[in-house]
Amino acid sequence: MRAGVRCAVSPQAAGFVSPAALAELALLEPVFTNAGYPAQLAEANDELPVSTLIVDLGEDDADRARFMAVSIMPFGDDQFASTTFTQLYVKLPFEFDSSQLGDLGHAIALINGAMAVGHFAVRGDELFYRYMLSTPSSTTADTDMFDDLIPMLVFHQEHFGDTLDGALDDEISLLILPKLLAVDAG
Image (cartoon, rainbow, N blue to C red; front, side, top):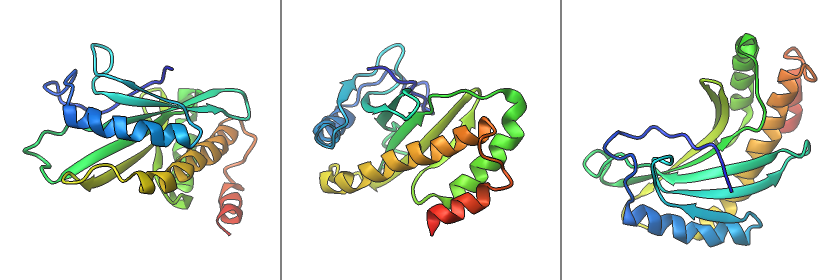
C-alpha cells in the first residue's frame, strides 16, 4: 500500500521510531482491518518521517484509490507531555490547477463549515482531508471510540471530497454549493 503522507515534524523527530507510537498504531491496525479497511504499519525511514499506519479506503466512484495515513505526531515530550496527537490524513486522489485556487478556497470554506469532523485544506499542489485527534497521553487508543470514528472519517473524506471534485470540474456551481450543503445537513 502507498499513500502520500505529509506531516509537520521537527528535524530532530524525523525518522525517529517511537516505541509508544508504534504500539498505539499496532493497536489500531486490527480496528481498521476489522472495519473493512486493510491496514499496514510502516516504520519511520528516510522517506517516511514518522511511523504511519497506511489504511486502504478502497476506490471511490471514479475508481481512484484512496488511502488514509494515521500517525502519532512527535511534538516532543516536553512540549505536550499530557496529550497524544493522532493525525488521520487523506491525500485526495485528484488534482487541481493553480488557476482554480480562488474557487477551491471558497468551496473548501463552505464545505468545512458543513462538516462534523475534520477539514479540507491545500498545501502546495496537494488537496487533503485531515482530522487531528487529541487524547490523554496516559491512556492507550480507545478502540471502541475508533469503531465509531472510522465510518465518520471515511464518509466525510469521500462524500465531501467528491463534492470538491465536482466543484473543480464545474459539475457543481459555487452558486448552488451552499444550497447543496444545506440539503446534506438537513
